[in-house]
Length: 245
Image (tube, rainbow, N blue to C red; front, side):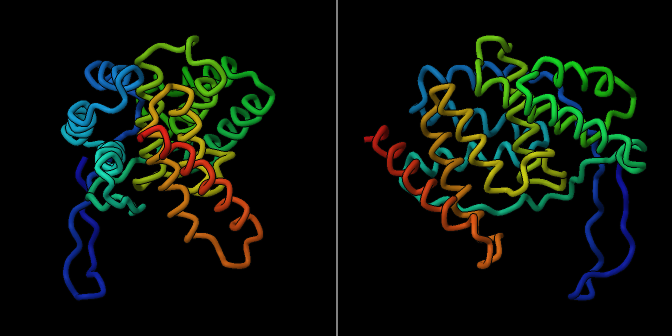
């Protein structure tokens, strides 16, 4: 669906049309195959470029950008967090707008906090199969799968892991909300770093850590958690960088 927003920007230019898309976890088997391959052969640049291109071809700019960053990281080039700027926005359902989806997402986050990962994942299944799936619930599903994978990835399929990574990256880079329990962009990237460490994908873990550190600039200088998080991330970056040598 293409939505045209009327009015002009600060330069008195008409804005570009915004395409609204439904964020529904969908299988991209070729992406899942490449992501799995990176766990066993994490230092193959061509596989990372292939994965980035698959995501770009399917309209997932955030995921495409992240894996492009992993290539830059491997080449020793600087990476910096910048939100995606395409004309795509992820559509909210009626349940997102009336608050029902937020309640479901909070219930799912509570289940994850109790270690009830499967219950949280199943809680989202029916919602995501509807004609108008909730944006918030789809993103919370991804967070639940990521949390489950950090604990034990063997209980999840390749497709589930790939879909969760892609949707989670979408929430961090694009016009979409973050999951409940992920208060900042930095905490989201740090969680992804934990996931990639669990999968043995060291360049992705290192890239996620660098993006987490860089995105701390979003926090107020008065935030007393900022310095602690920065020190923790710098220590992690140093350890992960050693795996590249």
